[in-house]
Length: 270
Image (cartoon, rainbow, N blue to C red; front, side, top):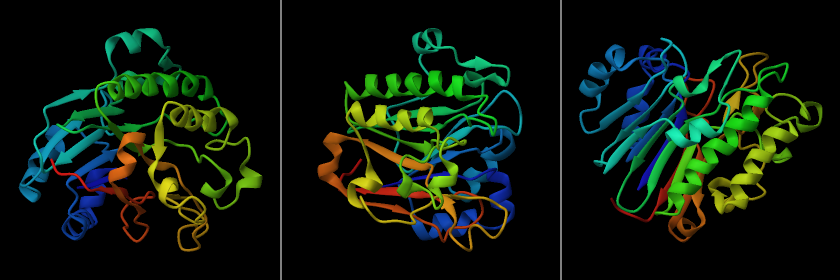
């Protein structure tokens, strides 16, 4: 069972570059979780269904066109698919700010399967001036509360662009970036909280001290060619799934976005 996550930074752009079909053909994910589709279903679903008829497709798009948004492509029919956060969690946390209402930006989609839940998330960016840190301090616990609630029913896999590097090993230049967007103590604490709730960073579980495993690179200065990057895309799994975790990888050779896909393989069948 192969589960992939990829921030495509615009699914139509990746497709126009002719890079989506080769990726799908080579990697053959059982489930593909996508962030930043930047598309409404009516703009892309028909084409995607024609290109990938073996996949059921579920879309959660932002109200604002061309912005944010997530999707799940799956070869296996889910029991249920839910867009967004539960209403009681949305009411509990302050999830809107001067930039907008994050609950209307298509940032979360969750599918239930027999052995586990799979959720994907596109976490709000803290902004260069850190003006969205207060939002992150609401968003991170809100999403984690949702995942922990599901975990009480059955194991959970949640993945996506978390917009934070957890530890110094997770970015090429940690020292000059301490306290900056993506490497503040507040953002990093969000990952710590996930681990405290019993979720496991799948990549670091299998590769605890392997450096230079990055998933995002700036467009500037040849950062990707020089592998001056950040690991901000994760697949987190319930601790009970570690016994069936066969691999956790980043796929830095896959082009088309400023992010590369990340994946896990589990010795389970749906």
